[in-house]
Image (tube, rainbow, N blue to C red; front, side, top):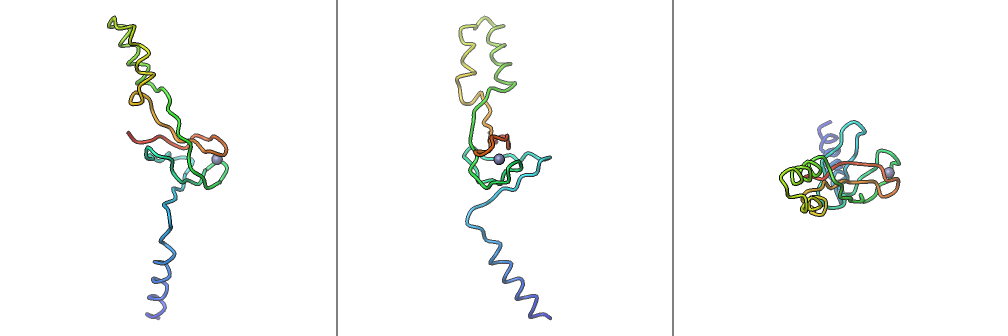
Length: 105
Ligand SMILES: [Zn+2]
């Protein structure tokens, strides 16, 4: 009996060593991902693929642009929309374009 347990533990150690980490997505919980394309199984099309990154203006981008306008610096209003650090980085499925999560800053 003890021999069987050792044998199964050894097998699980071999099979639990993937070549690259694969993130499994749950439809309810959006994982926080890195700032580089991730290897992910899509929750929509179930394909294993690299995510496509896209920068988008978010709530903070609009607030900063509004503050620049209100303080008289209206000529700098486009600046938040041009700076990478003022926009969020989102991950999308490269097959079906499903939104998969947000990159951690
Ligand atoms: Zn997909």
